[in-house]
Image 1 (cartoon, rainbow, N blue to C red):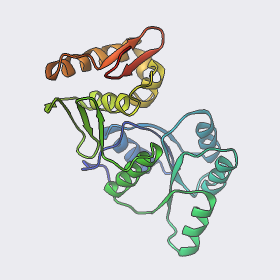
Image 2: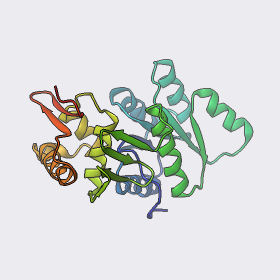
Image 3: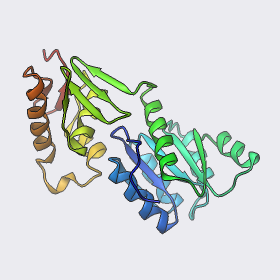
Image 4: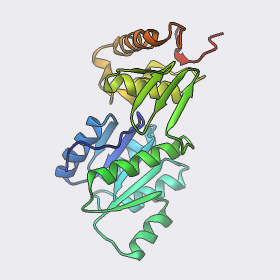
Length: 236
């Protein structure tokens, strides 16, 4: 199942709740390789706790789970006001099963076995919906981020970015005009492992600034001391 996919995520943090160790490994690894930050759980009770204590851009949720089942988990999330988009996974493919899942609050539905490319495409679409955006292009001044092709240009010049540099660029661009803390960047870009190196975010910002500077020396990413970073063409 794991392999290269033409679909690319939107620098998002996901929760994947699935009791199959094989699927946890395969899908979790594939999503991370594609650039997602992913928390994985094999238990419905733990999955509910994770969903309630963390901010996710989308949740991929199996229906058949130990602890509490996926539909119960989903209903409890909706009852408690959680609006995170949820993709349900199930081995059952009848109209009544799909209707039951949608009535519980699911945003999309995927039947096992599934192709990795389809899973990624559906997650990609849910993440766009999380930002109320159907567009695949984000523009900040002369910077353009194409989330479909996962490419970035500035002043018409394509930038050669590493996977995490792209993820960082898109995350800041989607939050353009708003200060983003180091903690938020770590959570959404670095899959929770950034704490090993306290300066990992600062180093990534520095490297990205250098690449943006090659196309246009006008500063685009600004530091807000003690708060974080902001992408804007108007620093004042």
